[in-house]
Length: 211
Image (cartoon, rainbow, N blue to C red; front, top):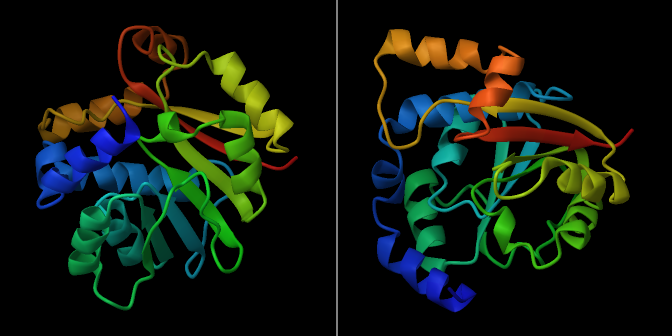
């Protein structure tokens, strides 16, 4: 599907996006936000996170509650409008292509979720992001779609040679009761068992930073 077709699709679906996209938005986005902060070099209150392909900024809402500053960018104007309704006028939100956007000043962290496939040239994209990201890049990766070794090589070539990987087992489309949710988060740290699960479903969360 062409990028313009995708943009049109997201424009039509922008209203209520987070509520529809996640069976349990609070559990999913809280866990994602925790790992954005904690995986790799830790973020602290007041750090700015640039969220590329931010959608309606559901993640931004959680990061702001945790004391971080947030800047959201999305290629779909309707998504940015929804993000502005969610977060208010005081939060910087812009319509732009993630391949081309650069913030007005360096940011502590850059995130890219469910959107790595929009990078026209992945290695060039990592270099672009590394130029304005001071502490780390955080993104999700489906290892069945993109070979992990290839992505790690692209990160290293972009100067982001230090990497932390964390399986992410909180499901997007199923709401788990609290005991199963806790078990899923525990399983993420189970080493070989977690890597076995990643052969059939789920994703990695990847944090990458300069050596």
